[in-house]
Structures are given as structure tokens and as C-alpha cells.
Length: 63
Image (cartoon, rainbow, N blue to C red):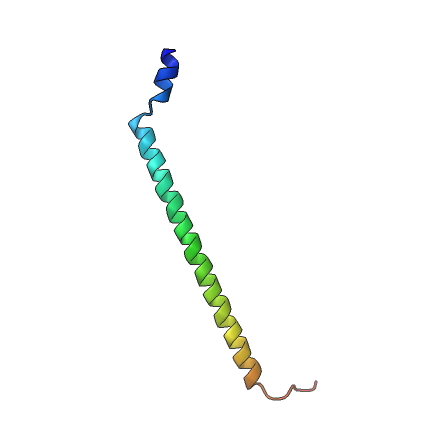
């Protein structure tokens, strides 16, 4: 019974590790969101550039 009671008590260093883990997971989520936004922005810029290039090019060249 004493082991069961002692096992339910969390040591301070374990709490610190759990808090650090939660903070790191939150940071990873924020970075993943930022990465997704940057990728969308990049894809939109590429699409705009391709459309601009398509409208600027003269008639197709025959090979």
C-alpha cells in the first residue's frame, strides 16, 4: 500500500519535465502553423509568377 501511495506522488523534477514537454509541444504546433502559412504564401507567389509569365510570352515558338 505504501508503494501505491508513494507512486502517486509526483517528484518536482518530473513536474518540471512535464511542463517543459508541454511548452515544447506548443512551440512545435506554432512553428508548424507558421510553416504551413509560409508554404501557402510561397505557392501563391509561384502561381502569380507563372500566370504573369504565361500572359507575357508571345505566341508559341514552332520547333
